[in-house]
Structure formats: structure tokens, C-alpha cells
Image (cartoon, rainbow, N blue to C red; front, top):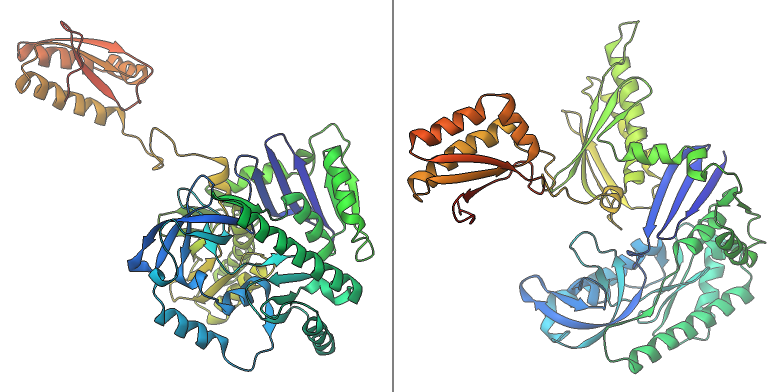
Length: 514
């Protein structure tokens, strides 16, 4: 099974595509104007405290203020475990201690307005929502993660060999570091020499010292430490997951990738290649077409069935339909199972490509067999395993509905590529011409009867004017105005919304408020 990463470099954008056997399975688009903030460490300033929800807004010098909750201020070991898949060697239940702390302390005892704070971004700003922050700082290296204000030392759960885990635990406990600082061994530390681990621990400690020095020297909200960019993350991902190839279409970035990989060469002999063909790289490997498909509402399945992706304020929904699928043998249940299995696989892929987060409801086609329902659920869970965004999947209801959640880490593909339509304001709908003509008739009567205006001009969009001209509406409105002892003229303006119309006084040329 071949795994490749493609890096497409433009002046204002970097696109990362992961291909497995030629099929696009992951996509990250990073714009220059909206660089990733997760992992960045800031000197912030408390601007507002929300007592009712034990939270605060913090100015970090970015476009929107960040948001921090009391649980992100007090040490919360459970969150570290989730972030790094780590395993703690502790002789007490730390989660009970965390809960007791949270219940006893009030946010007023921890934060004050205008107080300077050291915070780290744990969730990207999305839409009008600012970044989610924590004061539980973590600095990630290649093999280790340092926790400057947490004393815990642990090993990633992904390291399953017991002897290796014990060796790493003894090793990091022996490191000469302040007792109030913690360390986590990442998965990559398994094959790392002891000297490399000691050297990286020293480098992480130096980085922390530099961060604190910058914090003390600055007086305004400012960035103190920037997490690795998409280029570096691509190289590390390819090495960690033993991918076959990294293909880059920019020579400068290609050289940068080779330099980054040089120190990790012994771990994995990754092929880093410069793309030289004239045809755009994403077009040649069919990525552009897959991106375009991922922005559509409707996705066809190989069997002839299809999916509908919709979004509401509260959740995303996926509807599975049988579509054009046929079964010559006439076994309906078998056909429905086949469609649902295909749908489960494509839903998992599309959620990742679209970067859909939050609550998701998948409406599979109803099946009578409980065994078949379990097969579909198992397929969905299996396909979601490789998704880096954490999530949970509940069972299938008797109506074929599956509830699931997916971690919302950054803006979705739709939020990155599109903006709200100024005409429909995101509803996807505008009024019919007939509806607007009825409104014009109603408003005409009001302007003449209530406002006492008898010499009028109505201005409409050219498309609406053409509709008025084709039918008998323009003639009808003129006659209606005449019956009410008024004169009505028609003008057009392509600056108007297609549903908008304005009434003016033909004498004073002033706009009439309706």
C-alpha cells in the first residue's frame, strides 16, 4: 500500500494532500492570512471575565480574543492524556484532585481584568469564535513533550511493548530537570538513542527559558513561541507513519524538506522528490477533482447510491440514498447492506476531507437485520480509526441513525474556501420574482395611501424589470397607481439585490422610506 504526501505551494496558500494507493484520504489547506495557531504560546491580557460560566476572554494580539475556561487554567491531567495518548505512573487518582480543585476555586481567585497571562492555543479560531486557550503549557519536540508547569512524566500509550515502556519511564525519571516540570515520551522515542533524548530534553528546557524571558521583557499581548508550520509537520508525519514519498512542486520548499529530513534519515528512508512536470501536480494526481467533489452537497457512490451532506447551526447531517443502484437477484436486504457499507467508508473519508467537526448524524438506509446494522457500524468505526481528529460513535438506532462527534480543530473546508452569499445570507434561497412583485404592489398602496406620494418612480434589478416587462405586471402596476390618482415610472439598477426595490419621489428625487 503506497502512501504519498503532495505539497502544493502558492504565494498565499499551502495545500497538503495525503494519497493512499492514489486516492485522496486527507487534505489540509493553510492560507497565509490565516496561519495555524494551535500550539502557539502567547503573552495575553485578560479583557473580560464571565462569572456565570467560569471563563474569560484574553487578548493575544490576534484578530479575535481567545477564550479560556476554568478547567483550562487548573491542571487537568485528563486533557494531557487525550492530547498525547500518554500513560501516567501515579499512585493516586489525579482526576479526583482536579475535580475537587475546580469545585472549590472561583475564576475571580485566579484571573483579574488586565492581568498578564501565559497561554497556549489548543483549538483554532473558527468563524467569529476566538481561539480556545489553556495555561497548561506543553512544548512538543520530535521525541519528547515538555510540560513546564506539570510534574507528570509518562509514556505514549501507542508504545505497547512493556519492557520498552519501563525503560523509557526509568530514563525520563532520571533526567536532571526541575521537579515541577514534566516529560512525555512520544511514539518516535522508541528507537531514539538515549543521547538524543537527553539532548532534546535540554533543547526543550532552553526553549522554555527563552519563552519566559520574552514574557518578562514584553508588556503587550504578543506571540512568544510559534509551533511548527505545515511544511515541517508534513515531513514529520511522513517519517512517523513510514510513508513512501513526499512530492513538492516548489524547489525552495523541496530543499527545506530535505534539510528537515536529514536529521531523521536513519529512522525512515523517505523519498523526497521535486515535481517537475508542466501539468499542475494536483491535477495530474486527481486531487483538484476530489477537492471540488468535497465541496458538493451530493456525493455518488460506486454502487449508484449517493450521500447528501447538509449543515445546520447545531449539527451536520449525512443522508444515505439508494439512488440508481439495482440488484438483479432481487435480494433487497443484501443490496441495502452493500450501499450502506460503501456509504460508511465514504462518509469517513469525506468527513476528513471536509474537516467536519462537532455533532454529526448519519442516516443510513433502514435494514431489518441487526447483524447487518452491526456490520455497517463496525465498518464506520474501522474507517474512522486513522482519522487524526478524535471522535466517538454511538450505536445505530432502530431508524438507522448513527450519532457521532468529531473533534473540531480548525475551520472546515467550506469555511476556508467559501464565504456567505450577500444575497441569500447563507440560506441558499432568494425570493421568486412573483413574490417580489406582490411586495411591490403592497408597498405601492402603502406609499400612496399612507405617505401621500402621488408622483413615484420604482427602481428594480434588471432581471426583475425583465420579468415585469414579459408579463402584464408593469401594465397592472401602472393602472393600479392611476386608480389611486398617482403616476408610476420604472427604472433599473444592477447595484440592487435581485430581490430589492426602492421607491423615489419623481419630483424631489428623494428616497421614500417604506
